[in-house]
Length: 215
Length: 408
Image (tube, rainbow over all chains, first blue to last red; front, side):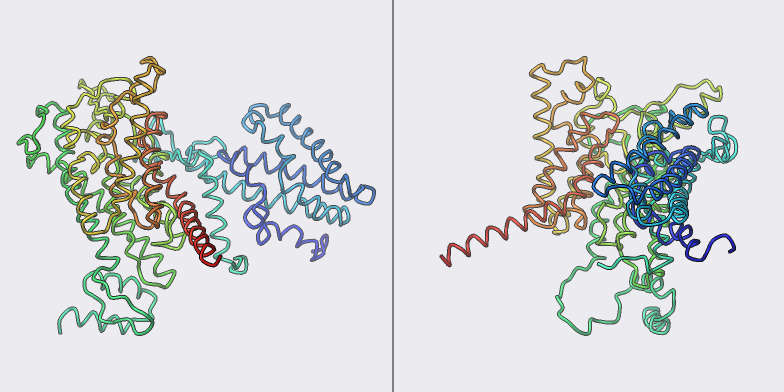
């Protein structure tokens, strides 16, 4: 690794697996449940958070020595709100339909616990380059889970992927539907997203026993 | 050497092999184990988990057999081949071989799929977890075919059973550790995943869906409709069945839930063998009656007029709610599940009452969820530990008070 030192690489790879913000820290669950019924929405959400968290971490890190600690939450909010507004406006301009599906959840990135959590826990105490890597890593960890959940929910719930009818046409009864297969409506409801996230957590912890908390 | 002896030897030989739990399960299903407890305190009791479960299954067999006759009976009535008969439990039109065969062909596969998939998963988990197979699925496996519509596609049932056993039970640690009743988890999964197969006026009578497809394909046939009474009432229509028919069970519905008479007999059997809790059954009926009476009063007082979408179900006499839909079946066989119900006696009264009360409430207020019983029991399953906690705490407080009075 020429570009990144070993320590820096860990900043990106850790949140992808053993310190995943969703499955290990159980943060940012609300948006993971709400918008993962379609793969496309999941991907856009993942990219939006990647943008906001990557840039936001750098901005906060650059300002870390001049932010008075008493009002740091407000400063963090302003930064994240500004970035989210940019994302929201871009989506409205170039992907209007999608921004309607995501509706309020783009705006709610502001309150996504992962973002404020990384600002507080990392960007306030580390340099811009490391903060950038940490932001990218955590956003990617969040996005990976979103995309996995979105993949299964769209595939099993609607029989499509990114809108393509991969399993055949349910109305004309082609593909799998000719055999009597039907879409699972439960997958489109939010509780099923929770169960899918739960299954990912289950698989992850049974592969790596060190992640299991003792009680 | 007889088979029993040979199995015992085999068991000892393969004790530490990977598949041992699966083998032991089959072995103890056939014979009593030849080993006894070696240490610790033991209680000598005639019934174990397996016998308890067998008694529950025995209580359900009449419902299953009745369901088979009823499946054929509803099918032939819908086709117009026989006339509906009213009254009389021993009607000769009902107890015919033709009816039974139709039901047998449709319902036996449901039973086989339910047990096959469920037990396969139990065996798999026993092997993975390296402990003995738990008998928990014996009752669930029999409940499941009784609470689904007769025409449900088998693969859907298989998917739902897999989901219910894994997510409803195994993730919590298996039999005795589950929060939700697995059979109802399976039904709820089906209900939310495949609503077109779980509600409406087509699914309750065998053949209605096929007939619709034939009509859609251009054949000149009459559509079959087999609406449940709850469905008709929710639309403000008359129930369309004699009260006696509703009680005896000559109505469309899930396989085993229609005959209130046989369910009551099964319930009495459970109460007399001390397997089912009479407190839960009784308080659930009381809860349903009170909710029904409240609704009747509201409808009678004119707050709700017949233009309201709640009027049909609200004005139905309170006792009718007890004999239609899955209320009786849920109360007797599902709410009394010893694992997921409240454990304390006082808790059982509260738990049962709320099951009945909420069942009727959901039925009336949300006609889209005609089976309020299922949702009410699942909800109360979640609250059962909380109820127990407060009952126990209340008891502790009471005794602490007594202690203070004495010492003072």
